[in-house]
Image 1 (cartoon, rainbow, N blue to C red):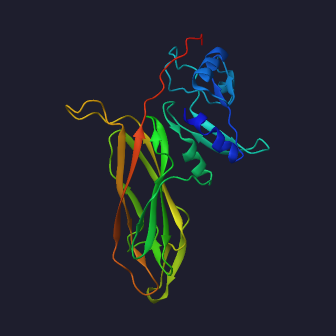
Image 2: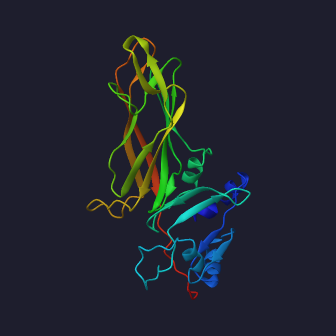
Image 3: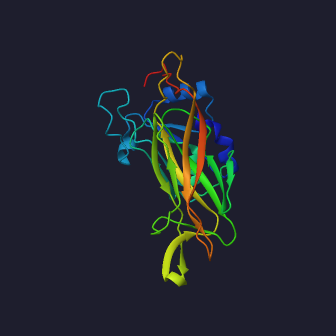
Length: 269
């Protein structure tokens, strides 16, 4: 279980976690025993707490096994109990990974990265997670360090090619929107223009959700357990005298896809 595997890492960061479920205590105890869960699992039978906070998942068919589940989500609290972050999904089958939430909270996540060096910058492509299951939402990251005296154009720069992370379609993978940091204005006096640019090191973040495994090719046996996401980084760079031709850097990320834990407890719900 992904949450349990991150308990020690979260403790080192000064964080703890508690999960709330509509399942009965016996169900949670059985699950905790089978999966060696060490963090608290709180039971909310009948979902009164879930309903009181307006979190009841209304997309679930009444009377079904999932009736009573909340919209999947995470509240992040500080030491004083104040909410400092929220991560919620519409479908209970989809969840942010711990690493993707940490990145959004401004914390570092050390993952293998592939680096590309051009005459204008260095770009390091990485992902918050390398192993996932269907329904997990992770973040792709591209860390960019422009060379000294170089700026790259940000979204909104007219007449230039702004930097963009472009992903190719992949079966069973849903793409989010690229998140850009705040750009700074660059004034080019000879043309009397002011355009948004990035000059200092910055990061682009793009969420993707693994919705299902790709189907196997005819005669190839079981579906592959590795999925590769490919794309490119487009940008145009300039210094104070010269604007260089637009550049496209090919990028790719590979992931191991595991199976969901669908085993149900024999304890009464």
